[in-house]
Image (tube, rainbow, N blue to C red):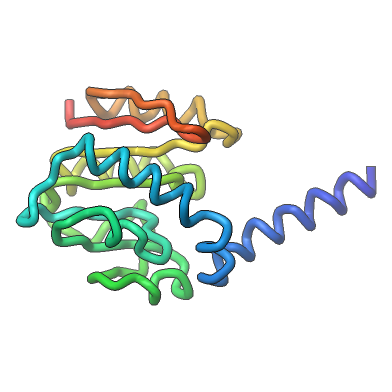
Length: 172
């Protein structure tokens, strides 16, 4: 039991550390995240005049895929400072933006990290017009997140990516 707990704590510490150091995050996640972003980009069909909120933007990889105005929000300063677009340090549960300020809001493999997923989804719905969520299937919160998205949004398309389920949505 002690050995299991020790291994679990080491694993959790490593997972948390990957979000503290941009180089580690990009080494581990860059290609995987870019693939999801490409899928989302082709589904959303945004123009250069569109305004996109990347919620949980990390190091700002969406800038390599989307050709529009991007605003990123993340809680981890060390990742956020790498992003090459306008960015906000903050929580997804309290978005400092006006209603319907964004043509699209994306959240790529980040919802499971939020403290209050239901509140975050309500805020996302408030500030956006169209939406894309990439939900990590191996997350213990996967079913709960999919259920919440189904209640708050009209799901237009479901795409099964290697590790995630991608949902393209609009408001009900």
